[in-house]
Length: 206
Image 1 (cartoon, rainbow, N blue to C red):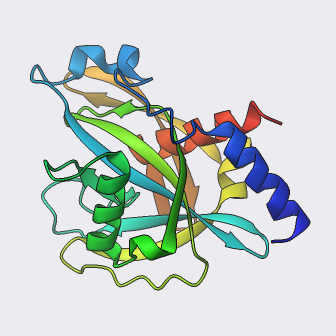
Image 2 (cartoon, one colour):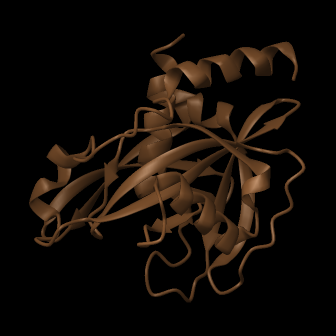
C-alpha cells in the first residue's frame, strides 16, 4: 500500500461506524421521505460498499442490474439485498448477496465498518456495510440479475463537481435526488445517496 492509499485507508477507518457500532433505524433520510414510505414495516436489507485498492487510489465496486428485471432494471447499485432469516447480521446479508450476485466470496472481503441506515421508498431499511475487497478478486456475475460489474475511483465521488441534484416526481410530490454521471453510467437514487454519505463522513475526518 503506497503512502497516499495508506493515509486514505486510515481516514476511512475513522470515518465509518466501527463494527461494534451497528447502526439502527430510522434511516438518516427518514425525515425527507416519511410521507411516501409504505404503511407496512420496512424490511431489513444490507449492501456491500466495497472498496478496492488500486495504484491510483481506492475504487468503489458497483454493479449494473439487468434490463429485464421487474425492479430497478438497468440501475447502478451495490451488491446487496433483503435480509433472510438465516442471516446472522447485516454483514452476513451483504456477503451472501455479493457472492450470489457477482461470485465474489467472503475470503476476498474484509468488512471494517458501517454507514448509517438508509430507507427506501420501495420499503427497505438498508444497512451499508463498508469493506475492502482484495484487488485480485474475480467477478463472475449472475446473468439473471447483473449485467455488468465495474469500478469507479473513490476520488470521483469525492469531487463536488461530479455531484448533481435532480428533481423528480414520486407519488404525486416532488423529490430531490442525487446523481453522479460516470461516463455512460448514471449513478443515482439510493446508491448515490449512500456514496454521498460516505463522502461526507470522509470530509468530516480530514
